[in-house]
Image (cartoon, rainbow over all chains, first blue to last red):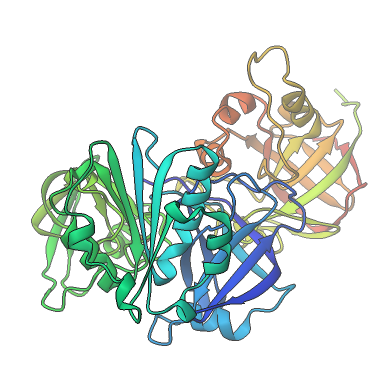
Length: 317
Length: 165
Ligand code: FES
């Protein structure tokens, strides 16, 4: 089970508009001058009225623990979290913000880091690029956006990063367009790949990096990719500790059934992106539908809010 | 045997739900048999074991917190600065021998509490705060879980005194 995280009531200290319908929100704590620490790649949960919980990458400097900075893109077609923040948030407001968690950390053993940010997926990359620059590590950040006008945080990136560390790709400027298949064709020894962006970008990056060594590819999604052809089926869970069996109907999540059986599991996004509801599995054939687990973790972990199984699965609970 | 001690209530903290940071109150209402108004145990939104238990309100000694911050010599290597409320107990006391109050009744201001059982540190706060040695640091001095026998208003500064049981 993922560890619980402290939830803090934090104040909105400033709001800034950025290109591409992005709002940068600065949170400070009314009483804690030092916030819980974080590393590049971490995200926080933001608890909104009505029980909505959304994940946002921290884009500030991990060395500055006086504040947390997130970038929120307004998604009209989203699940309503970003639209609510854009419409309602004012300086001075209080929101419940969790301590950071990291599923997307930099791998220190890498000799070089290749960072790909698509649109708002640039937010974790900003923190990563800052950390790598501060440590003097070899890295290149590729930023993909529809146009210069739509690229959030571009001015900051251009001032902070030397030209050979930042490569820009704009759909409306053919000279800058690259095919990811081409860019990722060769994996240089010791290079790790990190990518984050909207679903189409994630699918593109994944398809273009299938030949990379699995433990050198890292990503973070804001929402799991939807497979329109997926038809959920009923399956059975067995608890390892007690042997108890639970039937999970086709229209109900494993998490719901586990809770109904009195198993204490944390959850937050209930959408397969935050990892709060993770547990282990011992035997069985899971159908992983999350956007958290690495290929290696998929051989032994299970995200109970969205993932399912064929037939029977024994969970390490 | 009449007990002779007298202490003081220093802080009152509540949390609206499990994992929520605790908030300090300047005044709180204790409800007999239930808890502190607005607190997670009162609201039934806390994390606790499914076994029947009494924990209307939890208390901890400020002396323990001071020893932890100073790196008390008996626990080499453990030195932990907890922010106010990070201990996740409701009431912080000074001058009250909590470990000796199981089964004893005592007053805080106009209210009456009865010591139910010694609190046991849990791995949950250790993980919540990312402080790996907190569990060891609180062993045998993790405070007291109490039942509220007579409810009422309490405030920091209230005297805490023993009652004849
Ligand atoms: S609750 Fe977020 S991944 Fe399951």
